[in-house]
Length: 139
Image: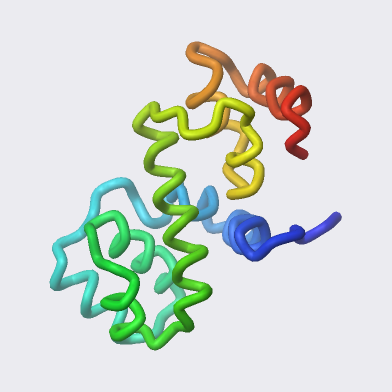
C-alpha cells in the first residue's frame, strides 16, 4: 500500500491512518467543524502538541494568513502552503463549490470519496463516488 505521491496525499493518508476518527484535514471526530475563538487557536499554535495540525486547519478556516501561522508555529512555509491548499479546497467542496469538474483536483488533494461524492454527485452514495473517481482517473 502506497503512502502517496505528493505531500498532500501523504499528510491526508497519515491523518486518516491515526485511527482517532479523523478524516484527514476534513475533520471527522477530531478537529470538529466549529472554529474555536481566535485567542484559543493562537494559544494552541504556539505550544506544539499532538493536535497542532487540526489547530492549523482551524487557523486557516478562521482567516489567519500563511505568515501569521508561520510566526506562531515556526513550521516551514512550504508545508503550511500545502496544508492551506488542502483546507481551502476542502472548504469549497463542502460548501458545494465546483472548482474542478474532472475530479482530478480532489484526487490531488487526497480528499476522500465521500467528499468527492458530495461535491460531484448530488444525492449519490459512496459507490457512485468510487465510480466517479474511476472514470476521472483518480485512484
